[in-house]
Length: 437
Image (cartoon, rainbow, N blue to C red; front, side):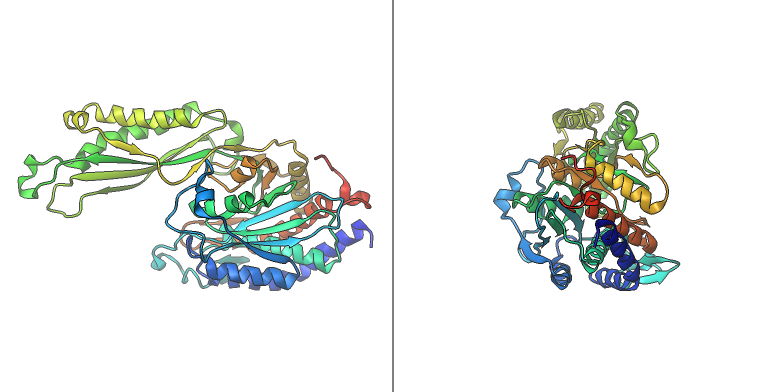
């Protein structure tokens, strides 16, 4: 069968799999794979890959090797009982290799009463599947499975290796997930991550750092509050200084590519204060307050200068308080630490993904950078060209998360087009077009 005939057969096979793949997605959503507890779903993922005929192995890297990497994030979990799953479709030779990467972990559902249905009981309604993780990113995981299944049914024989990575821990920084896989030696001529980024093909994201600010007070009984020092009150000018830093950075640090995604117009970087804790009893003056935040930064900035800006803002906020001048707030840098990622938009893989998505959807698809951190930064760290493109969804990390099922099918068909040309190998001009390693 000719290359174009195989492509047509694979696209037709994909269309015939819609009901089966919707059922697979529902199965995934029913498994509550909250970050740090991905063992059950990874067993499920390994079974699905074996059913397809992929050569499956578990990937886990010891802590000491992982944490030595400059972008590793320390988390409360180890690799034990929650491996990554790598499914290999070995090529016959002569074609380019490709990694297809999707994470299985999801954030907690928080208050189930905010949902219209239980978060881990999938609901089909109006062409959408609702449930925690449906969009972020089990829909993208199923799109990969769908594409590979259709290609195998059509008799496609790749020239280059195709590796399906089912990874853990993306929501907490990806250290035990994609980073572990690449440190273990998995590599390719290109990588595609099917995060729910539908409006554009994404080729960049900012650096991200998490920080804490600890503010000391002096506890006493509330009946004698004037003899204490409220860490809560002392924190207020520090919070205000950090808010001003966010506004200043938002004006001064901009890159047009980072302002193309819906909802991001006018802001490329952000400083967010996500959690504040002070005291432990209503009638006790709080003797300690802790602020937890996140700051993002653009290509061209350096991590030390970003840290210095936060630390200077904290000092500025504390400068008006005699107490804080004598008891300076302490800034710590813990959790997520990722450098910016920016893929060359002219790379042949990016061109191919854009062309394939545009052909599939019948409209031009533009490039953009995301303002969130992604596992794509690890591809950049290891010199692997990467593009991010996935299904259309909504309410990610919120109640009633959903994914559009037609968009999952569209992404699967886009992947079929990409794999057919990128991994096809020598012997068929249609399969080697745009070879530009």
